[in-house]
Length: 331
Image 1 (cartoon, rainbow, N blue to C red):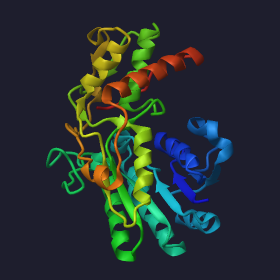
Image 2: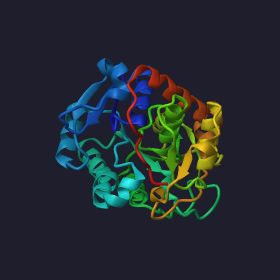
Image 3: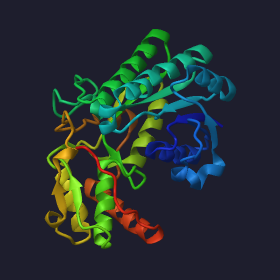
Image 4: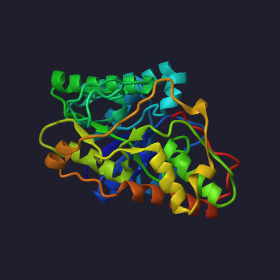
């Protein structure tokens, strides 16, 4: 039975990856930071089938101890300070976790067992002010946020350890991928949750920023399968995972409101407070390499993604007590 260690298992991608690996008959270990209260909501349905351990990307000794004790075959490094607006207000923390945390994990692998296969969660935010359209593995980077800069460091240090120490270390450059498990602070979930609340009569407006920003949006379960595919190859390579389509925030909003038969213009309020200090206007990926070498393909269309997220939030409102407000996001 292969053994996988997932950092960031409490997040959207970590929980879906745990689901996927259990289906592949893996022993799954989830690394979490010590907390007085555990945030295990996303994987409580499989919690009895995975092992949760403590470790921290800021503490290199803890990482060495984790690897020495559990000896994983694969490591999926999904942990990060991953909210772009927070990276502007907490740039040093973002760098410590999202950038240097990658180095600490790679160094722990180098010290304990260089045969461990390592996956680093890189991001389309590294492209930022894009140099070409669409963006591929060879497109020059130009990050426009502390988050994007930190992810770029993590990406290149992964390349450096691969080339310097002959380690199987890869980066997946994943474009935006969403699901009903996405956190409420992220725009797609803010929209789906807000539309559901308006449709249920629990809210009267949805405050957003830049509706013109364009993204390449896919379905998160498809993307975690791509992560696994990368670690099953004979040789380590980096891959872009994307749909190859770009859609504006406004399109996302319109489809979401149309799904509940409402006119979005009656409810959406543009609030300049939610604009980013440095905007990323357009992201669209070129997944040709992943399609030809991995056999990876997205399975859910953009419209289907928006609709399933709205449906999930409508269903959630029927089973939980609604909160008085939804978090805001800078776009």
